[in-house]
Structure formats: C-alpha cells, structure tokens
Length: 82
Image 1 (tube, rainbow, N blue to C red):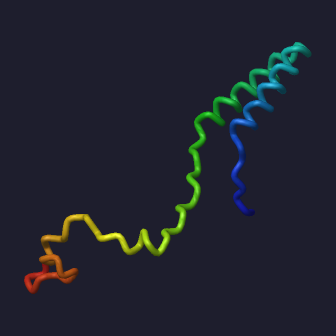
Image 2: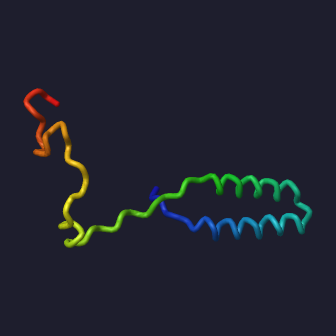
Image 3: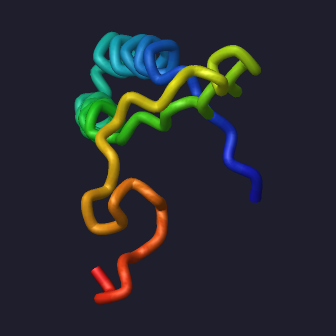
C-alpha cells in the first residue's frame, strides 16, 4: 500500500464536525470516540517533505565546515589508522 500524506488540519476539522453532529444527536459515546481520535491525530508525527535539489551554484559553494583532524584534511586516514 502506498503512503499518501493527508492534511491533518482539514481532517481534524471534519472530525470536529462529526463530533458536533454526535453531540446534537445525543450520541455521547460517539463524540468521546471521535475526541480520542482527534487526540491521537494530534500525537502523530509530521512527515517532512523531501529536500529540494541543490542548484549547480549551490553545489559549487565552498565547504566552510572544519576539516577532519584525523585525516589531516586529506580525506584519507593517517598511517596509524586514525
């Protein structure tokens, strides 16, 4: 099954309307169940969108991170293995 992102805010609005409908019909148990679902929805992690690809110019920017001291800035390990 493919994963499809949902708009949780819109889904919560729908659930709130269903809860209101349940309360208008005196369906207390239904309203409580929907309240529990809303709480679970609030605790769901948010999936982050994929990273945007870098442009050629962004890839060409100089690396400002510190060089590895174990490899003396060469990218290779020193003979002693560190």
